[in-house]
Structure formats: C-alpha cells, structure tokens
Image 1 (tube, helix red, strand yellow):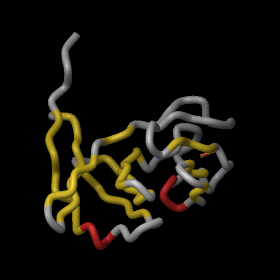
Image 2 (image 1 turned 180 degrees about the horizontal axis):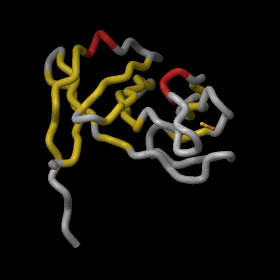
Image 3 (image 1 turned 90 degrees about the vertical axis):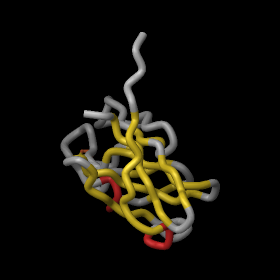
Length: 109
Ligand code: FES
C-alpha cells in the first residue's frame, strides 16, 4: 500500500480562527474549513457531499458540523457522516500550528 505525500501549506494566522470558531481557506483549489474545537484545530472539506452546502456556515454541536442547506451532520474530527441526506464522508486534512502560523496538509499533486 502506498501512502500519499502530504505538503503543509501556510494558510493564515492562528488568531484568525478563535476558540469555538471556524474559517475557510483555499488551498490548491480546495475549499477547506478549519474549525477550532476545545482540543485543537480540525480541517474538513468545506463542501457538503450531499449537494455542495458550505459546511463552515453551519452550526457546530460539540464536534459535529451541521450542513446549513439540508442539515446533514458530519464529525469534524473524522469527516464521518452521521445523518442523511448526505451519506458520503467529507475529506479531512491535518492541521499544524507553527508559532502564530496555521498550516494545512494537502496531498502532493
Ligand atoms: S447540501 Fe448539505 S445536506 Fe444537502
């Protein structure tokens, strides 16, 4: 089994995503939502797998993100889908903090 290489890209400052907050970033043509939960930063694709809803604009319930369009729920930590109408998980991305900088890991092209 081959493992895909990850490249970390600086997207902004830690302060841009306050505790309990979220922000979206464009990285290599991907729209990625970064959520700051009580134990750190988590990044998922910001496009609902049901019909493209912007997940960063939805409610957050603990570690669950609720799609603002039709209310499918996703686990922000794992990308797992927890309720219909979506049934496909969203991609997740590793997040790294270096000093004040926020970096997101994306697959090498
Ligand atoms: S677009 Fe997200 S639940 Fe429909």
